[in-house]
Every structure is written in C-alpha cells, then in structure tokens.
Length: 168
Image (cartoon, rainbow, N blue to C red; front, side):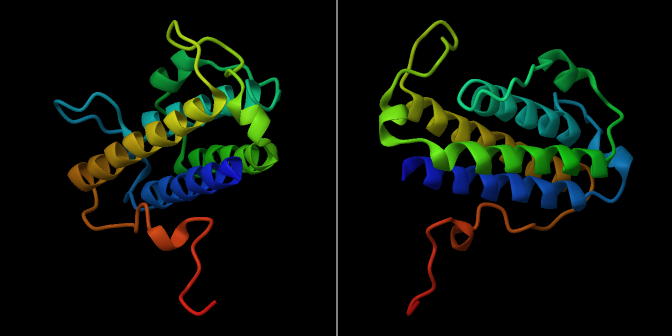
C-alpha cells in the first residue's frame, strides 16, 4: 500500500513539473540562471528525472539505468518537449516499479548505501518524494522569478492517489 501511495505522490509532482515547464514563455527562459540562483528549471528537471531513474528504476526496479549526474547539471539545450518526454519516462517507470513493492520489500534495507549510510527502503523512498517536492518548489519559484507569474496548481490534495470526492 505504501508503495502505491508514494508512487501516486511522486507521479502527481512529476505531472506538476510538466505543467511548470509548459508555463515558461520560451525555451530560453527554462534555462535562465539569474544572479543568486544556482540551477535553472531545466537543470532541476534533468536532475529529478535522473535521480528517480537511478534510485527507483535502477536500484529498486532493476531497470539497468545508468545515471550521468554530471550531465544533469551541465546540459543546457534540451527543449521543453524533450524535458516533458523525460518526465513522462520517469512517470512510467515509477508507475511500473513502486506499486509492485511489497510491505516486506519496503521494510528491507535499501539496496545500496547512500551518503555513507544504510536506510530502510520505505524511509529512502519517502526521502525521494520529499526531495522531488523540494526541487519542484524551486522550479515554481524560478518560473515566477524569470518568466511567468501565477500558479500551475502545484501539489493539489485532490490529485493524491487516494483522494475521493465526498459522497463517492
């Protein structure tokens, strides 16, 4: 059950990331880095996709994905449509991997050491969901700062996997 809930949360936020990228007025604005801002929205999108494919797809799901973390932070020319395609791939991977996890698998140690420590798989997957939300907030702030004010409906509770309208 937890795997399904976390998958729904991550997918919700990845769909929000797609809406954020669509809300930029131009390809160039996705890659702007104003003074004091270290990463553009494009960089953060690449980082999030690579992070999820590595830590969920490869480590938990055995996808064989090979991460190029340096490229996540040096690429500057991917189009919004290419970024959307990459985000869609991450959504498909999360949907294919996480709901199948059993409570026993979630309680096991995460398959690899991370930052010099071992943690339970469920604990690390929650961390990944929070990491995504943290960077999603940065993308929203970046978009509002450099290009387009307003909201894209980020992190909406009705979009949670278990949300049901009253009376349903």
